Image (cartoon, rainbow, N blue to C red; front, side, top):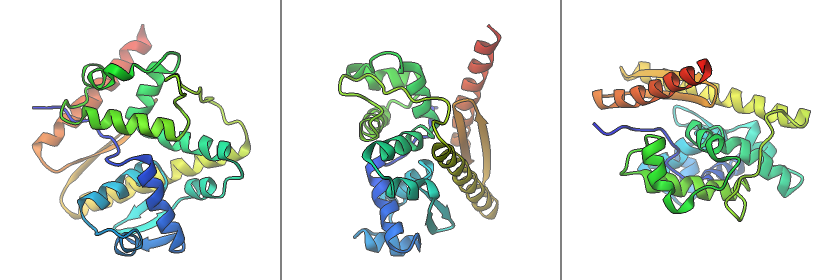
Length: 233
């Protein structure tokens, strides 16, 4: 059975566009109102953007009621493009797969020409979606100015540079908890199961609707096992 890796099913740009739409509607709106404001319909494509915006910590989704987070508000009201880029970089790296890729290549050039193959072989990304994941990562890394023009990475400090950045980080964590709670509530209500795996470079909630979804759990546990073995070396 093909392995599955959780990743945002929409770009950073579209996620920002959706968050801006919610912000324009007063910071909170239904999915229907947001979709109408964007000239879209509430279908699979729109819901994919909603999911991605939530993964990046730009919005929360409480059973169809969308709200912007302080993380997005700080980005929207940023004084400079550099401040906005700093906030977006942190939002981008909230995605565990993107964080892993960054950690793997942060001191070297990203091998653009073989990136999709590398995702399959080293990060267990399904071959059918590898090119799409590569596209979202590269586009997002460039949009957030994480990836430089020569395909090297802008190094992100592990420590907050100011109380403002720390506040943004705290809000991102709070937003993530809200999303995880929403997923958990929805799973219980629909007789689904959800498993959360959180740790260094990992923070994912896996919703299990059918037996195939257990493949995702196995992949994540494999990564946990690998990290534990590396820590013991």
